[in-house]
Length: 96
Length: 198
Image (tube, rainbow over all chains, first blue to last red; front, side):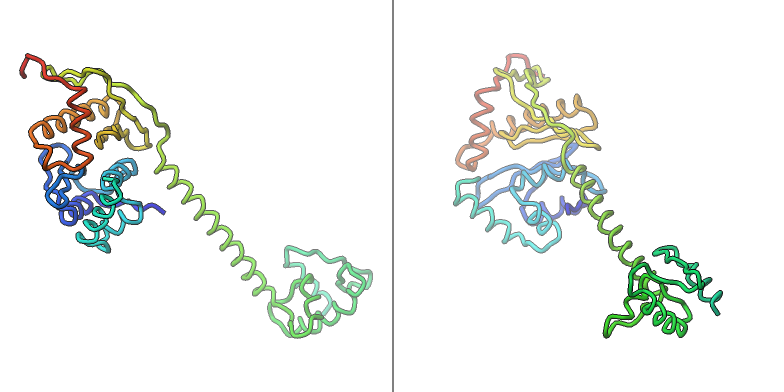
């Protein structure tokens, strides 16, 4: 069952674990840097309250995570190191 | 005594027994008379009474007559479980619908809404319509935007494309991963700067 996550919580998780420094704007966007290279950008809406399903899917797609892994990232089960290792695996598989 | 038993059974809304001429309750099967008699004897000890259909159960070794209240609770429990399962599935289906866009369509954009930048060829934008919002995205460029209406969502995605173009234009390929390098290539082919500056 899909879970709706809080915007601020998602923004915090993305910032802390993916190391994204958001630029200012109506929606926060910033690059994910892996081993000194920008691998992709992530956009998270500002404000409070739960993410809408479409927005949540879009963020999850940008982070290259499955539904379960996204929940783990936001709910603190997945650490920043875990996420970076996951991205390294994807890079090794030529996916990012 | 007979009238007491009769009134007790008459409270039970299911498994209507046939009333015999001698005013004794009976089941419709051939063995009914004896079992009913046994059932009556057992029921007489129970304050809550017994369903006639379950009197037969008294014949099963090791299985005693079930009081009507217990039977009612059992059936109510079954109904609650069934209702809970139905509601749970309806909820899941509803959430599944919420998560799935009502429609998805692809729209080409021919202009970025900026006088400084010009699109050489159209960019395909994927528009996803959800109950609460419209998501516009260009999967090839890894950008998305959200807005309450389709027009606003398309305007927002144009701004994202401009931001991405400006950002990548100022970066060396050495600091870019595989995807950002690809985005840069795509955008440099599709977008040109015009002489007019904003």
